Length: 235
Image 1 (tube, rainbow, N blue to C red):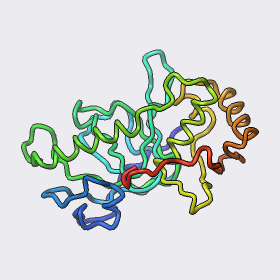
Image 2 (cartoon, helix red, strand yellow; image 1 turned 135 degrees about the vertical axis):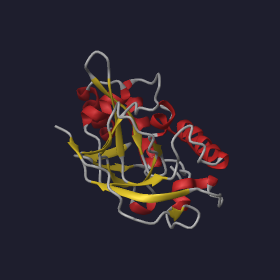
Image 3 (cartoon, rainbow, N blue to C red; image 1 turned 180 degrees about the vertical axis):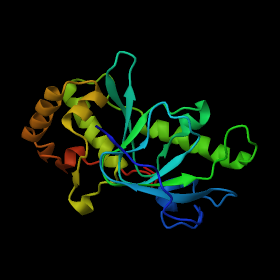
């Protein structure tokens, strides 16, 4: 059973995103000092804990500072799918702000720290037009960056493309010898890619045999063939 933690405030004072040490990574090329772009460090979640639950009525918008969130969607037929990931610099909960209810459950795949942005409730007139414009631009860029690059590919290349995409968003670099921990289970990866877990296992094994990467448990080492392109600071 998933654990649920009330998202508590870790910092009483709001911080101007333009002066925050994490601002460059969180906002990337959009990081220009702007009125009312402020956040409050809201929570550090342990692996398995929930930040948001699907169907919750709340207009809270979060910005992922560190870690990885899995966005899970409960479908009408009673099954569940992995709909996406929340990585450093990603906005989470904006669809709930727009529609009044969250479309996904956001669960920590690693230790995750988030900031709660000072976005007033829809219709209150308290959020500036500049802030809302900034959020929309950021979210549009986020959707472009996270669009599935594996659509239509065979299973092997689909898994390889996912590894590349994750490594890029996690800012894996050759300086770390291309070594990183993949926090998703094989079942989660399969759900995200539309593949059976056994297919994911076979694909990872074949990629290892071909020398395109090496996998030991959840530890992945990239080869030259799958080194990610330079990610934007917000990726």
